[in-house]
Image (cartoon, rainbow, N blue to C red):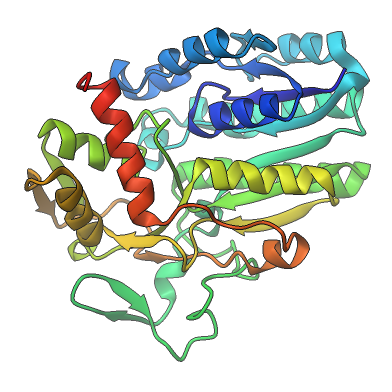
Length: 356
């Protein structure tokens, strides 16, 4: 029996991973206790996604466990042992702003929860591949020190800079910067995944994501940039742009393309691998550009305003290079661009939220 374990299995990336792996013939064990509802309120609950997975995938087995509960995690891993071939760890507290409200909860989930999963893997299925959803926030606000040039609708990297063509690579330092407390807890998890790989010779990878997005996202004001923006566009809800003249740039990767990258790694895993992963130059936009696209897709103006104060540790410009991953896995390709991603989100929200 080929088993995969997916944490955060009802979230955007987790649910996409469950569907993908199930389609490959794997039995998938999901771990998700809908903490997203606790973080961001009922509007962000992932319970709808959990129900959908259980209804559509007969081989999916859901476990409403908390990854901070080391004993419960160990018991679950022990029940399946060496039959577990793959662990995809997507569960997290994902917001900078929320982390500052409850730092102990944030750190215990993102750091201690990751440690619990790594240790259970080492004890019960050390030959398994362990994939960790990390974040570009491990670099703190170091990207803001890059030579940026203001354009009419976005900030852009000086064309003379070596990262201008492909984006920021994995050599950027994670030191001497403001990370936000969320960034710190994610750094801890990221380094644990690397260290378990090196120290115990385990097949581990950190995928340092830009903006992860897609139609399965339960977007909320504090997390889920494109999803929540389109939700506001569809429903007429007010949206507030925070700082940097609305010209801050993010790369955006569709959840399917990210999970396909996980699958490529699983086919030929390495030890303690680290990859920046996101939309790169293929799919990126500024806030102003995203608003314009939302207005074009919905056919009406958005209700939005601007607030000068940016979020602490927020990036002015992030486009990450995926060239290291491409070198290791040249068969991997993007399937969605930025407009296609937003159109999918619009169509899903119109059905789920408005019943169209």
